Image 1 (tube, rainbow, N blue to C red):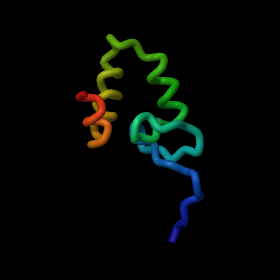
Image 2: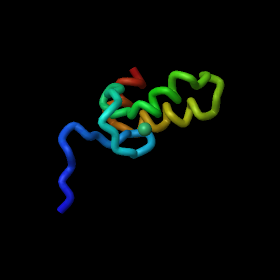
Image 3: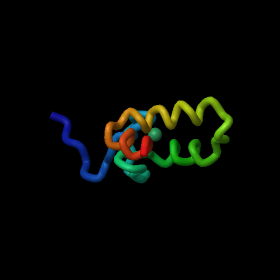
Length: 66
Ligand SMILES: [Zn+2]
């Protein structure tokens, strides 16, 4: 059985496994998605898509909904 290298997380947005990234609330975000999110304008439809992905996590949903 394939054994995952320690420290490799699966990105919550694009589902790609990446060693480099960060946890946004409870979701792992890879570097490429982080860059996209930083560059995105709030008016951009893609921005809403990212926020929607983040809300896919129950913990995130609770934190974002105040
Ligand atoms: Zn990603």
